[in-house]
Every structure is written in structure tokens, then in C-alpha cells.
Length: 147
Image (cartoon, helix red, strand yellow):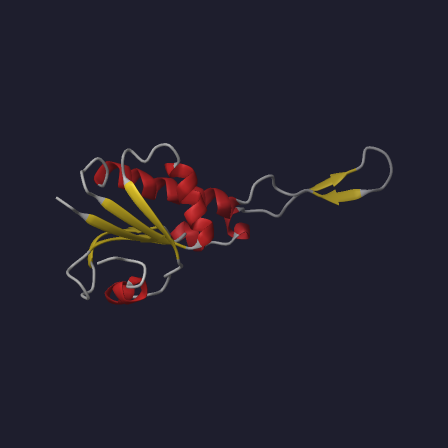
């Protein structure tokens, strides 16, 4: 079967569609919500960053965290999306997956799928469609998709 998948993803949600006929809205087949993706960096910590004192003298320095917790959380969600794709969309002849995400999230997904695409034919579309209703996604992708 020549099945095509359209994935619209951002840091807070991923929507998986299949075409429903030329010019018609896509059919939503799966949704993954990720409320942690809406959090700001400060929301991940219960306390403020610490202060370091010089061993000699009166100097003080604010200590910064090594990693940005929002980046770590976004990469974790990108890995969950890629795992779903590998479990449900790979290895079928003629299957194509169109992944639409903003540039930064596209990078996180490419990082997780690098070398592990499992024979999936992946077409990347760098476009952030956050907030676009499911019934209007096809209108925003009609120039990028051949169907």
C-alpha cells in the first residue's frame, strides 16, 4: 500500500495525519500531547540558581546550570515522536512520511532519527504550524505536498 503520513510537530504536541483525497482535509490518526513543552526554563526548578564565593577575598559569582532544561525536554519529546514513527510507520514499501516542524524542532528530530530511520522515506518541511486547526493543515501544506 502506498501510504503517506503527514506529521505536524512542535515542542508541545505532535499530530499524525493521512491524506483524505486531493484538496480535502487530512484525517487525524494520532495525537501526542506534551504539556512540559510549554514550560519555561525557570519552571523546571524549585529554587533559584546558587551563588559561589571565591576561596579568598569577597567575590561572589552566580552559578549557571550546565544545560537548558527546555532543550533537554524538547529533545526527549522529539525522541518519543521518532519512536512512534519507527514503531508504526516504517518498513512498508512505498510509504512516505512528511514531517513538518519549525527549524529547531526539525533539528532535534533529525538528530534522533539519524541512522535509525529504518527504511522510512522521510521528507522534511521546515514550517511551524503550531495553533493551526487540524482541518486547515492541508491548506498550509498544499504547495509542499504532491497530493
